[in-house]
Amino acid sequence: MINNYSPIVLFAYNRPDHLTRTVNALLNNSLADKSELIIYSDAPKYPEASKNVEEVRKYIRFIKGFKNINIIEREKNYGLANSIIDGVTTCINNYGRVIVLEDDLVTSPYFLTYMNEGLNLYENDHKVASIHSFMYSTKIKLPDYFFIRGADCLGWATWKRAWDLFNPDSNFLLNEIKKKKFDRQFNFNNSYNYTGMLQSQIDGKISSWAIRWYASTFLADKYTLYPKNSFVDHIGWDGSGTNCFGYGNFNTKFSETYNSVPLLPVIDSQIGRKAIIKYFLSLKSNIFKKIKKVIKLIFKYN
Image (cartoon, rainbow, N blue to C red):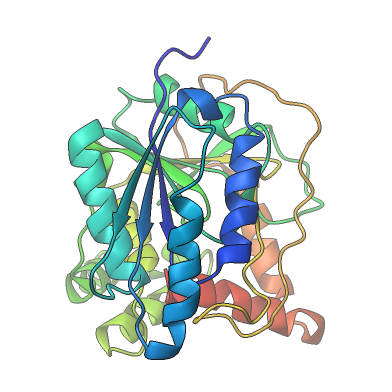
């Protein structure tokens, strides 16, 4: 039985329709009325974004159904990466733990149950960095839950002890990965070029909190809990966002049943890693070129 409910931190910008779907899905969770919702509304970057930002702000002022709602309206544009780093840091210093969502993620009715169970169960295990709610589609038979070294960014939760490991210095992170010869493992047996994304961060070509979060926890030898079946679906790749270019979505199918989170050995799952590697390798085919761009964009702008 869950008796300690984490606050939900939701980051919004200029997509009122997507945000409405995100909030409505959260309200379908049985723990919504027991959870505090903290919404960060970023200010418009360009004048043409002002109308949609104002629509977002009108909408969030009338949300009901959560235990409490706290709204932070940015007076200047932070951009997604800076907004998340600042917002997560502030909230985690106040609450000690957070569940993090963006305004283009639709959650399963079991999302909050899974997140809170994971947070409570592994709170005192310092090998665990975070709880993650998304897993790529695979034909490989996976256990209900498993650990992968590092961290991820599509519907996640963490504690202060883990977020304190976040290092914004991409130069340091990349140099450490190369010095310790972690390149191949960090890149999932070179099936995806995450070190290249760190280099792009250094070069100023991208602005990503997510690649630095992954690298920080990976270097600290920390692990993230993954589910076999996703508890979140990404709906943002329809051309509606500032960082989206119409590549579709992951078409996640939520499970109709829920298995509670067990206490597992915190080790890198070989079968889980194999499934992710196989998925990344499939992106090299012509059919999946667009999906490959989606994966890159997720880390590029998060």
